[in-house]
Image 1: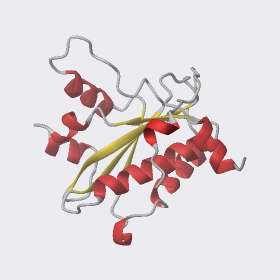
Image 2: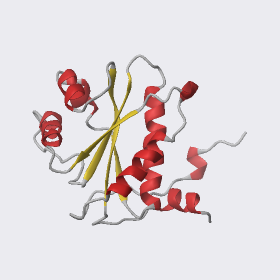
Image 3: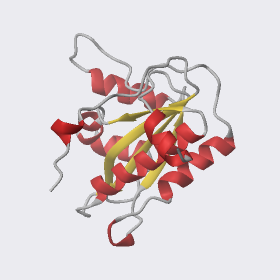
Length: 173
């Protein structure tokens, strides 16, 4: 099996990380993987904000996400790095482009021996009442909005990659 197919097969959502920090080279490799993703009309509109654990903005996002909930959850599982992908709010394909970029990044993480967790659960927090505040705090380009996020780190947990039922998910015409 080639390296790309192996990464696709082996990757799983990591929900537990060690305290080990990512190197500058690892972070740059992950960012480049996202930036190299194809985009509709080659617009290349996806912006990536890199946030290291301990940055107060992660706590603010967490507090906003959990406001009014009886069982708050840490959305990034204390990963050493979280990357927020934002896109042009006026470009129809930005959500798709961000999804393609984040999958590139998740596969790159697997190739580097790192864990990753694709994060959508903060959408309401980052697009809600505090949307403008978070856009400024996360340094989005003008007119951009949250699309998706991803956490990275060295795995402290493991699990089997998910299985699927070919017959119920695939139609061959």
